[in-house]
Structures are given as structure tokens and as C-alpha cells.
Length: 201
Image (cartoon, rainbow, N blue to C red; front, side, top):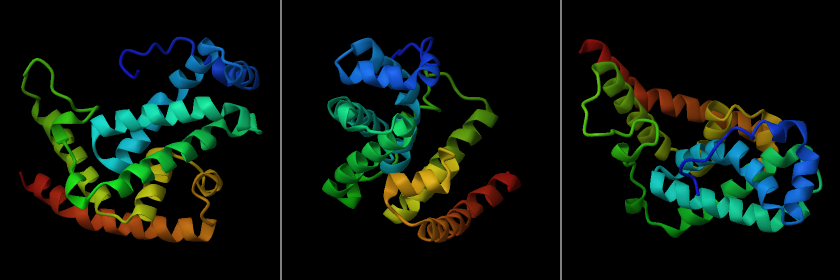
């Protein structure tokens, strides 16, 4: 479902969101495809930040869009499509997260979508460092508690506003700001040793 998706028509969604949603809710597969093309990658990225496993994130992304397709007729405010989808993704990830033990929540660096090796070629030093840093970041992110990881991913990685995050999570804005402040502090503390080591190399 995720592999090789074309993006040529995705921008059409931004101009005719209400019409596209209406057609999709009445079973038009091409209309829903536009929605999928526009939001599949950010939703996948968001879920990956929460669960730390690419294959699982892909499965949960597909589940997110299955649920969205079935519930499109319940979406009352088309302008909130993005936050509605992220809310579904958050619930799907939470259900999965709570059904697994901590031992199962390990980051698979060699499966990272961004840094996947192809044809067994060695990476240049710069790319290798980026791959290592990405792994360190996700390991640090995984160690945050659920609320902090959620707000950090939505605010820092997905660039949502506090108002949008409050709508997605149901948390108050003061709580979100507090959680984000603490999440940033924890992330800096966990990543700093790697950054200091890389400067010494």
C-alpha cells in the first residue's frame, strides 16, 4: 500500500479538500487515493517516531487509513482533516504500543526508511554519521514516556501548532508546553554524549 505511491495528484487535495472528502466518503477510490497520497508519508513518519519499528509503522499506517476510510462520513469539519487523521494514527499507535512488552520496542536502524542501505554499498562518512545520529535520536525518543514522546513528535518532527496538538491528543496547551519542555531537556541530555563523541572523532 505504501510502496511506490505516486504523488502527482496529491496537491489537488489542498485546493478541493471538501469535494475530495465528500467523494471519498461516498466510496470514490480515486478521491481517497488523493487523501492517502497527501498524508501517508507524514502519518508513517509520525507513527514510526512513536513505535520505533519501520515494518510495524507501515502496518499501523495502513490500519490508520483503513479506519479513516470507514469513518470519513463522521468528519464534520473538512478543514480539520489533518488533525483528524493524526488523531486516528495516535490511537492506532497507542493500541499497538500497549499490546507489546518493552522488550519488543527496539529501534531497527538497518530498517530506517531514510537511511536504508541499498545494493550493499558502503555509506560515505557523512551519511554514516547521519544514520548513526538518527538511530541515537530514535533510541532517545523511545525512552521518553508516552505523553512526552507524542508531543515531541508532533511539535518538533511534524511541526504542528499547540492548538492542533491539543485537538489530536485531547491534552491542554499548558500540559503540552510542559511536556515538550521536559522532552527537549531529556532528549538533549541523552543525545549530548553522542554529539560530544562525534566531535572528538
